[in-house]
Amino acid sequence: MGKTKWRPALAWSAATLGLDLAAKAAVRSRLSPWEPLPVIDGFFDLTLVYNTGAAFSLGAGPNEPGQSWKMIGLALLSLLPFLYFYAKALPGDRVRLAALGLIWGGALGNIHDRLRWGAVVDFLDFQIRGCHWPAFNVADASICLGAGLLALSFLREKPAGQGKGDGP
Image (cartoon, rainbow, N blue to C red):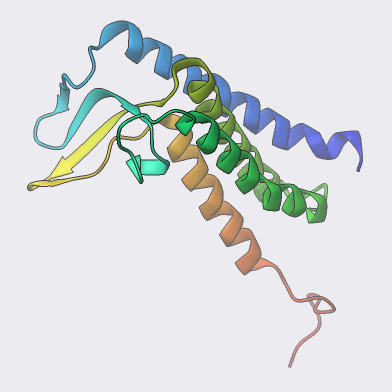
């Protein structure tokens, strides 16, 4: 693994982590928990929420002893396949390396929150016509965007042995 292969993934990861932590710090300093600040009336609020569950509040409930450590362990375990994808990525595969950086940066942002606050800081709060999406954060959005880009990179990948001139 060359040093240059790490650069794009690390750059995306660092940018994602920095943006996530800065956004969460700004929200924590300006909002009180569960008091929405309307941005687009009836559609988008900023609402500070502490999420003890997984992404989009799945499994959230009372913060039981050891809950944060279980979630941290799960997050670290879930990153293992992405190390494999990184090992298989070619140095010039900018989309795949960016996707991995987005996923890692987002995961690190949420792990940071669990270590520091015992829960993930969520604040992006969308609703439409009575349907309410669980609050999320920059890290969650980055993980989803990274996963989508990674899936697209796999869909665009040509099977082994199939080049530009190959085929019917």
